[in-house]
Length: 198
Image (cartoon, rainbow, N blue to C red; front, top):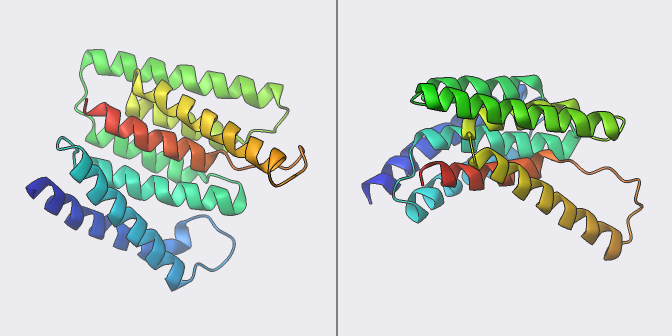
């Protein structure tokens, strides 16, 4: 129970910070206070849910929840993941991870592998995948390590594929319509974060 309460307070703090710094989200439009409040509530609910679901959930994960919730929204809205959120992910990963020689190797190789895989997809798709997605996937790999980084990426790609099929088959959207991959990478990242403590 103490873990849930701690994550409630941390989630409230992170949500408030994310709402307060909405001008730096990377959007070209004004972010309303209603939207800021919704983002803050989402962060708090995620923080409390993760702590309730997993007794070993660490409050440091709440920072990722805040950063990645904003990443999901900005990419969905404007189809771009600003570099500041990739850097924020990397910096918090470096600060919050109890690094050992094995972790440096595993997480570094996971980050490099995911980055190179997405670079290949970027080249093959001729820009169909954004460079922000490439960098963000690499940053997630550094944070999550092996095998959670791969799990996060697979979940994200599967979810994006299912969503694309729904758009094509149910909503009859054209095949040329682009979708934002960031929200799906974030979904996979949340699953990967839960896996880190197991």
